[in-house]
Amino acid sequence: MTTITQGAALRIALATRVLEGVDVRQFTQWVVKKLGLPVNENKLSGLTVTDLKQALSAEETVETSIETDVDMEALKLAVRYLWGEDVDQDDSLPAVEAYAEGDMPGSLRVAVASNTDENLDGHFGSALRFLIYQLSKDEIRLVAVRPTLEADLAEDKNAARAALIGDCQIVYVQSVGGPAAAKIVRAGVHPMKYPQTGPAREVIARLQSILDAPPPWLAKILGVEAQSLARFAEEEEEADA
Image (cartoon, rainbow, N blue to C red):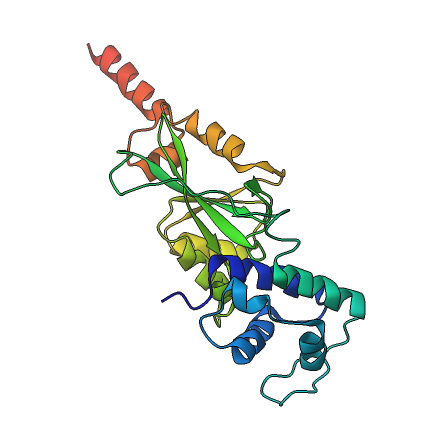
């Protein structure tokens, strides 16, 4: 059973962002303590500004209190996020397309760090979710959307984020630190920095355009011979003829 639904995870992550000084792990633990598992959108809609104010001012029990100084406007905005007022309309999750293993022979699985809509606009360590694409020479299909909230509750959040996309061959991010990149590589995923913000499919389409003649790094991932190496072999054969 899913303990925190995708929609609820997104709302909690966005709410935490506007609560300055509040740790996402600690805040999520408070939400779980307050609402019980599983946490879903309907349960979050029952939270109030008073609930948050009590939690953040340490008026509840020691086990669930979060001590920080957050102003009333931030509390109101956080509650709106928890209710979905600024999430479901302005930052809706993109629609996932049907996919079954084997549908796209010879395809790659590519993750994209994202915060809004279907865009590449996230850093590896802070993106709200990863968009997961299946990519072949002829098709790009969004097969999953994976919120990162539960990964961030792990003791090593970067390792957990890497594990979250461990079935992918490539991950696109706006930025990633050295230690985090090492964990991505250890998970068998190739990190690609792409600082510009833009539609994820446009970035994926650029990768798609070189699948017919992959450079060495991509050929290694695909398990095929790079075009440059193939040309070298042809030249060697011609020279020996």
